[in-house]
Length: 454
Image (cartoon, rainbow, N blue to C red):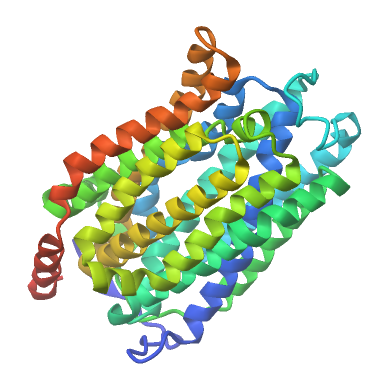
């Protein structure tokens, strides 16, 4: 394939000694956007639970939210390698801002018919299903998910052009810490307060955060010039380019293993979390505010994970750090599954998110360091197809487990079953996967990448 380096006088070579102003623009934009995501993370499931108590219908919202990772992540990888990654990020967030604003106006027009947040805490409350509003939620969630795929894949492939390779773990760790603060610490309680005022308010705020994020990203100067495909007239068919990314990942033994293990981890996580809002309301007996506080446990763990991931990795080694995530997921799910008090679940969510963020910092930084820039978008998309494409499958299974279990046991035990099943399978995954993810294998792969031609 013919390749060229884009000439642009606004490009800035990453500073090896500091993260730089471009990184901090991305950092701020992502933090603001994630604050909106945290608000929306409370608003969407609580709105859905105000419309229906059916576990399958609740789980379907989570399925549709992650379905784009299964369906669109592969073609988005080709798009990411063909076009300006910064502009893709701006367009994706601008689209999400407009769409969320439309949802906000729809909810505003219907909020008088919706029950108050305290009224839906009781499982016995009879709620009239608003089919039209439920379908609007599903459609909006699907489209927002597509925007998320474009934005996230572009952001991960954009980062290496803004930050020196030696600073990637630090940059990713700081970014995820801020995202956790905004997404699961500040956003959910803010969303709960807004719901108490009006169901539509959090959606208006979410739309505003997407718009501000898009504006900030537009101000970023391009980083170092990446190698990109030739102009459109000289491009090969997208299926050919996609196959090149797939072959590269599948031929890399360690990345292939990581992608498969991540897919299974995310499937098991989605299996338990798909009906979290019902589990929290009916088993843990949380109010909207308590549910919001419950999610802040993940924020605390994420903050600690982001800021300490590099130190944890240096002290324990890459292999042991990843093994901590594998076994931690099993412990967290089982303890939550048998608990009756939401503060216990809060602690477990903190532990689970801590290990998950350590995993993310290690593996994303590893991918950014070893994948050639001209393949980064495609290989990342294939990786996330395996890693994130399993989430909607897990979410669907979670809702199905509750429905099937409820036919044989009590509603309470049925809502516990996804957590217990997820925990048992996570323990089995640790036994199989941990021996394949050793520090020696990572060191060998990094050494091979540093000596291979790009």
